[in-house]
Length: 595
Image (cartoon, rainbow, N blue to C red; front, side, top):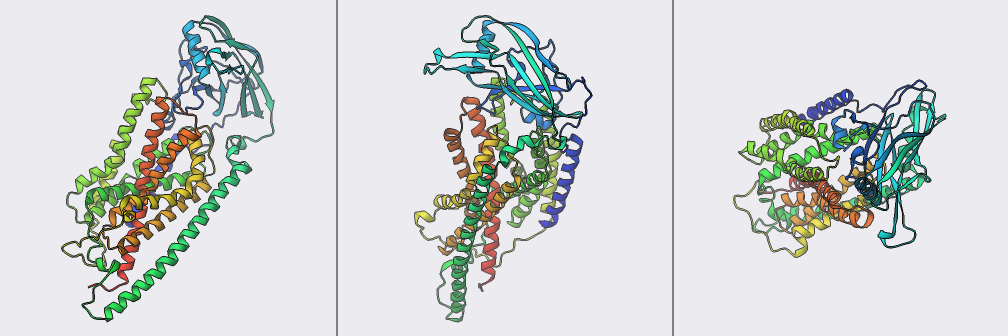
């Protein structure tokens, strides 16, 4: 396995970096230098309800001032997947040129357009633009409640004057902020036509901030002392949990195993007809291959691929590829790395399947390819249909879908097949220190707390408790408007998660074997992956208690894609749990003499 995985991983990383170099993902954003009065690109991106991050629409879906022909900016794959739809904005922001109340256009809003704006203001719509690759946001209007509880008595206003404050250093744009003139409002309360003159002002100011530090503003919020304190408290809490858990397990298991080894050694010196008990009693069954071994091997291969994917993502994050508002970089990385690591899944799944004396390796390979992609594809089809019905930017264009299908057809599937062929030809045998008997022993009746579901609950709780504090910040970044940049802390939490998962699975596997239950293969995988169920349970808590998300589209996107992410967690951590349990079981049965 190592001989295949290492070259494949190295090749994947080299191809990934090459792809990023070609697409410009690893660049540090715009590095343009401008002359006075030179045009600086300003793109309008999208509008949408502030509390529903997935529900975004094209900027000109609202009746703003628009040119006769809207010019769209060509975008990379990751930007399209991110829901970005950049078009030329109706404002002209030339370098170091101030404007005061410059008209954009005069427009007569119809009753339908007034109602459309009012609905947007009521839902707290914001707009997003990019100026020289720097993001800027603003709200399109405000609601005056006047202390009244009845929404029919509220007043709705549209902002018609936008003010841009821009900082520059020599010939480069450093920072841009936008605010609105609170005195220039349009009353949208009633359904009647309204004459509106849209205005904008531009104010330039010099700053000593160097160009290299212009993106630090966007990551500073996650680096505030209070947030760092909470993050480090999370790390310390998790480390204490790990130390206590590993220390407890190591002490108990070593003492119990030592007693077991002494007892079994004494039993071997005693009469041969003395009946065995405990985990040694089932030495002839503990390495009996599991049921549904094709599915088990496919889950193991897919989990290994997802682990490799996560590792590469962390490596790219730690070297600074995912700086704030590097549009689409994460989605590009996910698509490219997943495609390039499919060979790892094919190799691991087929190799292990052949070790388990499986014969239909082609079917096993197809199952491996569909185990994660299948549910993800079905979820995407449903959610993309919802986005199309809403006319949201989350709906992928037909061309983008064709590109993804081509990547899967020309890269993912061929690498999966090549990995499977290499796995089949590896000719490795399953290393079992004990011979397996012809007929399985009957498993004695077990108390309720030793069954699969209670064991999964116990196995998932501790790893989840080690990461739940960090989960809030991740959710607030993915499903909100916060910026997450402390990848080093996140990587430490990930390592802690792996360690706790491995140790708790090993402990539960020992207790299962001690109870003379030899069906530990699937149990160790399910216990290792059970953290995914806890994370999905946290999704329910976050949605109803910590967020203001609402509406069918946002709800379906949140729970649909989080189900896929938690399923990926389940497969990846299940693989970790099984590998740790397999290493432990082989070790303890090597240490005793079995006839």
